[in-house]
Amino acid sequence: MDNEILEYLPDAIFLLNPEREIVDANQAAREILTPGFRDRDLALSLRHPEILEAVDAALKGEAYEQGDVSITHPVSRTFEMRAFRLPEGDAQSPGVAVILILHDITAAIQAVEVRRVFVANVSHELRSPLAALVGFIETLQGPARDDAQAREHFLSIMSAEAGRMTRLIDDLLSLSSVEANEHVRPLGRVDLRNILQNVIELLLAKTQEKSMTTQLICRDPLSEIPGDSDELIQIFQNLIDNAIKYGASGGVITLTLRHVDRIPDIGGPGVAVAIHNEGEGISPEYLPRLTERFYRVDKGRSRSMGGTGLGLAIVKHIVNHHRGRLTIESAPGEGSTFTVYLPT
Ligand code: ADP
Image (cartoon, rainbow, N blue to C red):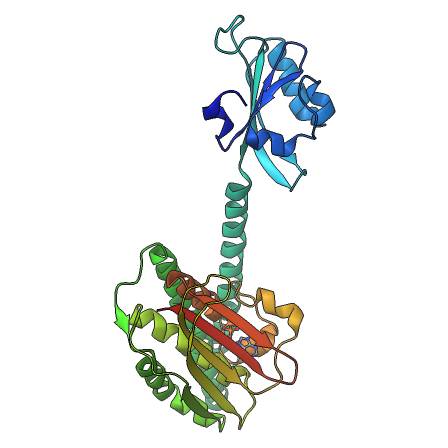
């Protein structure tokens, strides 16, 4: 495009003459058009009835047109469209009658959808324990009023359901606080080995309940790394807790700390902490979705173990906050390995 400023604008800009032929198009517009568009009717390079209608209206000098349109070439995107007529004889753009501007709003639409799904999920997750509580309260007020044994039983279920709601809210708060801080670099310095030992200690009772043992292997001498100690404690707490929940009873959880010259995908030196548990493992088709909020391979199983489905989403956000990487390797029957890479 002749005009350098228009050429590099992110919006797709098309300049059209009174015959609806394309006089010029900037870089973003050329991505959408089929090749050989210059001096040809817009309809030949962009077959989209609503856009053509808007341009025709603008050419006739009718009211300013605006609307959302979806274009599938080269990738599926949604644009806010504007077409307006230039004053006749505009000295700066001779021969141009109409300017068509397409502003990409795909990301904004996706963000609204993500928020909608998230709110629906949270409501759903809170509704089931709440419904259970209401049901048991009614039973205790009515049929089970004088039944001491039933009362004990129901109260213990109610306490478990209330605990589930508390955990869910705690996880939601962690997630939102990590998200809010994601763009600020962590300031502290941490000793990873120390953190891992503390988390192992913290989860010792749970580990013993399943007759499991945890071993920590340090392959390289490591010094302190930049990081937020509370957040890193949370990562390893979530990952080791999962290894206990989903690992085989009586099995060994192995934590391996080592230095890496290159963090996968992002490069640069770092440390890797691999958390391996024995057990049935995860089928490959589930792996890409594990860090999505509320995603669980087996919902009933996760619930029965007190899972909220938010643990790995929190881990992923904290890893991103540290400009690190999370990888997940697993094969059915061979257990799973979650590896956290952190830059040094
Ligand atoms: P949850 O609260 O359900 O544990 P997470 O976000 O921590 O939620 O994990 C999401 C899902 O990933 C779990 O429900 C489980 O299906 C799977 N998962 C996580 N860690 C492991 C593991 N070590 N072994 C097998 N499956 C796992």
